[in-house]
Amino acid sequence: MNSGGASVRALPQLPAGWRVIRTTGPLGFVTHARLERGDGSQVEWTSRRHRKRLGLLLPPGAGPATGTAGRKVRGRPSRTSRWLGALFGVGALCFAIGSLPLYFDHVAPRIVAATFFVGSILFTVAAYLQYHEAQTAPGAVLPESHRRRLRPFAGAPGRIDWWATAVQLVGTVLFNVSTFAAMQGDLGEVQERRLIWGPDLAGSVCFLIASWLAYSEVNRGIVPRPDRSVGWRIAALNLVGSVAFGAAAIAARYLRTTDEPANVALVNLGTFVGAICFLLGAVLLPVESATDDAGHDEELRSDGPAPTVP
Image (tube, rainbow, N blue to C red):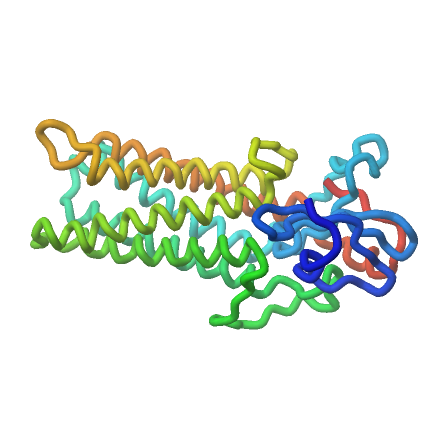
């Protein structure tokens, strides 16, 4: 837990008359902040909600009867969340289908490999959109405009969400390399190790790091602490999926069976479980943006009564 000092400088710009009461976050990052507005009322800022433009929260106990649960404002899913959900979802579906014996036992190996490659390309497109979302997060707690500017090479190393999305994007590119190489049927053992297994393992490590950062962004502390938010469920599902992908990558090289060069059963199981977790997380992305309407900004700009949102 932090308050004041350098950690405050990691927050978006505050409106005039607002002040920071305290901040929390892992590894020196700020993921949650308690803010006091000009009228003395308090609101809570979170990193994930900010970049997804879901507005501010009431601090625990500040709402009428139910605190931060409050009332849920149902709106339309944002366009970004719909695209992310579709791209991540279809990509995950490709990995899930490609790992099913019912599919790969009856389809040519190159078609199976192409299925994984298509899924990895969709993952990369979605990962870039997510990276762009983090890059273009508003620079102020109450942004004057929701305009997004394309800044493909801009960095924000002071924010945990930037690191999470950047590392994930690198991981998806490594999966592109691995799955593309797998479509080539004439690779030798050394080439397979360098072009297929190596990038696959490195991509899985990137996914694990990125998922842990994204989970740390929404979870307070090391012990799992569900806050009833859709964002927490998405981050938890992605973390489990990344662990499963990592197990599949290890099984492809180090956990061999007696008669095969890899533990094929574990490879397929890990890939399938990971893909299903990513698919469920993708389905929840539009739900997250529709559950909490971002239309409270106007009320907050006027420094009126604090909103009641989930």
